[in-house]
Length: 262
Length: 121
Image 1 (cartoon, each protein chain N blue to C red):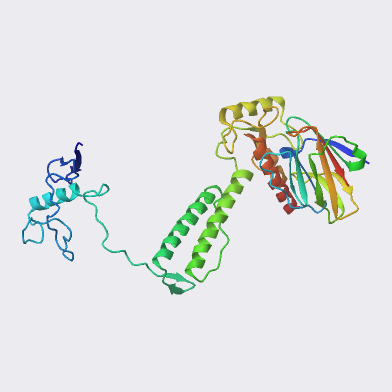
Image 2: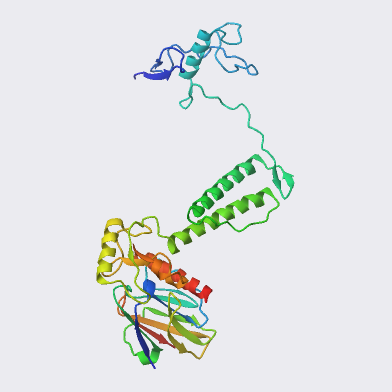
């Protein structure tokens, strides 16, 4: 059975570059003494190696400190690195104000609250990139748990709105080229359809980027950027290549909206 | 009496429901039809590829030997059945005697049919 070598790195500016320890076949380290004493707990250098058999509480000279660091690294767990400062105690959880009242969350609640808040903020930001004026419906809460649920609800609302925006309005993230939309009740001309198919075969569906239009003829569907049922000026509409399935999903949503308007 | 129209409905869909509308089904995943108790959506020929012939009438008048693709009950609280497009345009309408009516639908293809027959009762 062969031994293995563990490489270690000196801290920046510490002189030298790196060293190594030979691990013996029996698993022991050459140059490492498991019986070497450490600085007792409670001391600022607590836990560090100290002089073998000495009385000192820790290394005093720079050279000694350097050696001590190297020794620590050579003996360290895989993820340890020089220069890291590990928290000796967890920072206190700050109280939060709900309805003018200071409430002290538990550590676990504070973690969940932070996570829910970040998720909501991220989801809202993504919606507002498309629709800057969008805001989630305000919610009322009196407890930390209520506040967490409110943030989670905001994130859900934002996600739903994002899906709605992606599928029912807007040019879609793959939209790059388009052809003029035909007049109401008219279809694309053959030339328009050919151009639409060209765009589709080059760039795929304007929403999802897929290249199979899913139609019997292989024709891409010219999807208006806004459903015509919403009464937008048709002169501003353009047809972008879309898929049969996305078009039908839009159709169900368009009927709902048409019924709401009428 | 059977009424027939030829249309190229936007989004390649027609919707069958009560005159006051119904709960629109989510038209996904791909299928010949999608239904809720108050609304049936039927896939048509892609509107840019041509017209779809849609017929509405009493089922006994249809006299079709093959089985329908859809056979179920539709809520009709206003005793009227509407066939409309995704943009809310009324295409066909029929009176029905009850607040719930059996609807059977035949098509000439499961995918993008250009003939759809809707039989009531």
